[in-house]
Length: 329
Ligand SMILES: O=C[C@H](O)COP(=O)(O)O
Image (cartoon, rainbow, N blue to C red; front, side, top):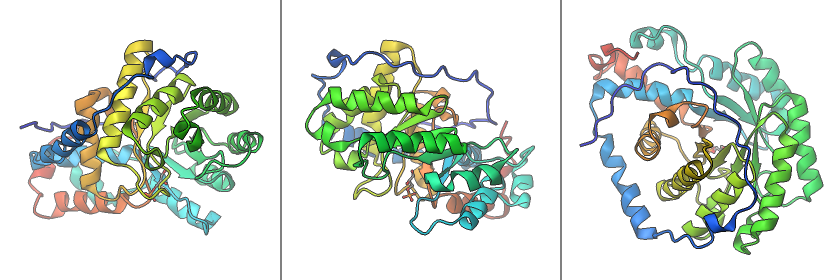
């Protein structure tokens, strides 16, 4: 039985080098085969690994919290809602829970993720906190506006203060296997991002096959994506474990070929502490401890934080109280 051990307080790693990308190299992915049932079997084995010592779970849940891109992407978003979200991003746990867990300080989330028009209020609300603002862009969620407008949207969000840009790819380019067109667009988006980190949303629920998911991952990384992200949260099927497994294996292959460490962001429909644990285990088993830090792993979620807070509260006050005294460092 795989045993989760404490993952510790945020380890201070050297920041990862920005992905410089490569020329489009079809040889790296064109003939790839992805066995759906093997991916499903492997993914199905992940939740069994959650039967872990209770005394380590609090440390893992705090780690998950630190990797959340706390998100609001609704048509009725207002500056007021964004301010409230940012207040939660800065103080995601009640003080008594923080104290009960023995944490030296209040942990914070990985980033706050909003629409471009909400970047300025988010930047203002997060001033001095060190929490970056991520903005979706490029005609999120469908990505079907003309390219000049999509690039202008990236520049607008960066100009407003976004440090991370979550772009969406043009799914038809994957479905038509037009890798050159996909590469050129994503490379142009990367250039428009300037110094902002770029996460490429593949919208895997629209891509039909895991083979397409692998290939699109590879092209996005070759075009310079710093992160690959599963979904917008608006597709019929969003983050799943088989899709995530396929993406992290592409990410590992790209890393072996180029030396660049690329981040991974599952997003869409992830709501529970159990979801968080499943994805943390996937990252640790497939890529190693290094991919449990917010510079290489994020969970995009609008409604997961509440469940993590509830579970941590149980550790402090409820049936897991004894476990909470385990050191987190
Ligand atoms: O990027 C983040 C997703 O849009 C969040 O999706 P969700 O609302 O299902 O958590």
